[in-house]
Image (cartoon, rainbow, N blue to C red; front, side):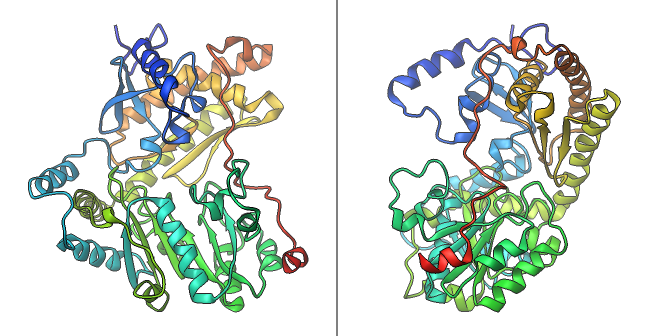
Length: 449
């Protein structure tokens, strides 16, 4: 009998998931197309590996087990799985065609809609993935400024200019790696000290989970402007979630360029680059950024339907309200159980993270334990609350009940130093993504390189 969203007696049966995984390991290396969806990020002894379908905020795995999902496709599902108005728009367009031999009218319609919403969208380009538009932004910033160096903070995709700063940097020439440096979020001095006459752009996620302090984003904007450096907001996570116009609307700081992908098409593959017209006009002749599927119609139909629904339903306010219930509820439970010293939920309400302090043990082991127990109770959990419009009050109330039970178990296991022995499988793996404590190339060293 498949598990449901309830206090199940057993961990889910994942027989079919495991069979698919065994087949995949023979011919796929690695087996996942997205690192955050891979088996290293989910308890191998308790969690499914493959999902079959979804509706609203619930998903079902290939063995028929049901879960409340707080990962939301690692970001793109903002309204909910199989959201009727979006799916209906896709089906209507499917009857007319998917990709055409000339431009499609929705390219204009979507661009006009984005122009009316996003503060810096004097000009718009449409593409398919976040990494595409990040790299396009870097390329045009270099072309516009005549400079080569990049400063970054956050995660910006798999392309050479960025991934060379991570631990997965094999295959990237040293000359390319040397052109990208990093800085710590909320440390404006680290940026100012690194800016020089060859810094083309600064790209960052306006926030990840930590809030900007002491007017950080405005100071960053001012420092870039003073140095003749373009400021790029990577709004993959913040765009259309924190506000309809993204972080630049929410914080009232307008970057030169901004990039979007997750959230605004409810799961369909599409991305945006928005920015100053004088910069973006270089795409006309001087800078090359084109792709066959940039005008693919199903994704544009989904984007128009999603953005329209977000606007009409004030979705960002709903995400804020629902996310606050989870964040505040988690922290209240941790406080009542006496474990707030080593676990908390933080971040902006639309997307929060649960963390564990090393004072109580290996954080990955603690997280693995909580994950396996939440999955047993019908909640697909990876330490995040990526909120969607169709997370119901019942979903949230049930999740908090599950937290109360699981965190009480964690408290007792920490006291008895038995957490590791209670794991059903291997601990979760660390990912390479960094959000702080970068190795910053000093300004003097940068000038010599």
